[in-house]
Image 1 (cartoon, rainbow, N blue to C red):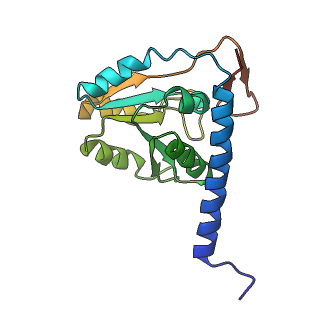
Image 2: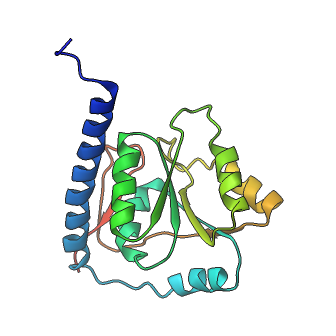
Length: 182
């Protein structure tokens, strides 16, 4: 039936849509970041842990992820996101800023933790993960990070963004924070 798009065609359309969205958002992030005053000295601690051959899981609240793309630029990190359209957009932005994205299954009862454990078995230096992502609830910690620290000798390092002037998107579950210029 010519009216129905093949599975491969749909996958290609989703891929192109996600990559196009990621490209636009990456450009906006670059422009926005050039207007901010930044202090990223605390990232040196994170780099020291990795340089000392520790496996590090950098943890942040989902509401800070947008700002972290630019602020942590240059840090060689694997970023975990879910395998969904939003996750694919995030993965596209990650690639544009030099991070290596890993898409975990989007299903709630999936094998996400086992995949993260396998990832750490390959000895990456730094992996970044939103503790309360991808869909909340707000600031509720998932236990997988604690398990990795306790059983796999992975260092947990909290990272975040602080801004005196910011826009908080209260309509979103994660209360996304966007620092304002200056």
